[in-house]
Length: 388
Image (cartoon, rainbow, N blue to C red; front, top):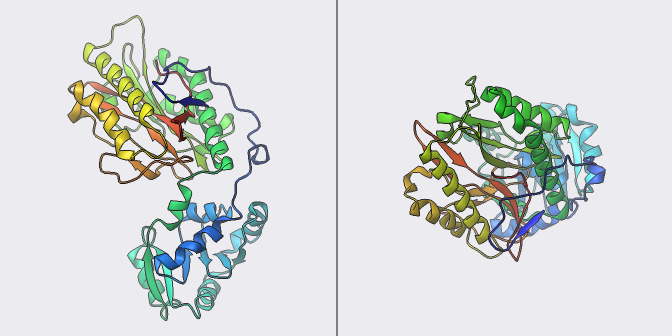
């Protein structure tokens, strides 16, 4: 990991395939104490207990990785209510994580009955407002929760998730190393005239071969005029000579994501369109400014401002059409937000992206992105692939 305290270098060590990606080879995560930390927030949120419905939040609090389940956190216990598919997996994962919770794997009717029992004596039950649909809320309020006051809460678990422990950082760093190694392997392919879709598939395959559970999100490969679309879907279009290719991708290791974008020029023997050459240069300078602004205690909006000032000075203000970055962890997009309207403050232990971009409709564009760890002195860059 390269620490940035001044103007960051664009050169980086050659990416190497990470070794030892078994969970036991990574630093342990501090899962056992997370539910207790959450309980300390319940009174301030105006609830006596909290029902967790976000799968990412359940995984964070307990280590349970199943795709179906609810976590009831009460004053004196915590219960995962899931179905028979996870009757063995759930208790095994909780035993591994050390989370102080029990699991109940039941059929649908039995789950409803158990939830009704669990809320007896509870006056106000908190729900995760951003994860509950209107239909689900109505069904619960007319069923097992009809005698309980349901209280919307916001970002209780997400707030705990913002600052990563050593085990979480190790997993994100491993995911970043896999992405670096995958790009190192696939990059020469760009000179062979492949389609965007072929490059995306090659990156996804290589990340899995290197130990990733899966890509962190749908890989973006956008060449030539398609690079003017920030979230372009890889297409059958062949990558040409003398083009800019925006490659945005990441790996997932033991649930945790990395996120990296590189803008790669093909065909060194052919001059790039002058406007695009300038766009690429401005984006690199903007990202340098943003990385240098990252440190503990700085307003997230300041990172956006540092990048945007460089882009604005170059006359491309209207072509930088998204925020500068976001948090990364169990979800590819999580708090904090690095945008001009963000109220977040960066804190040591957060992992964020810095990713300015400039997009010229009909011509092309460029974006450069790193995943970085916020520190007191600046930031440690976790994605180390060369930028030129």
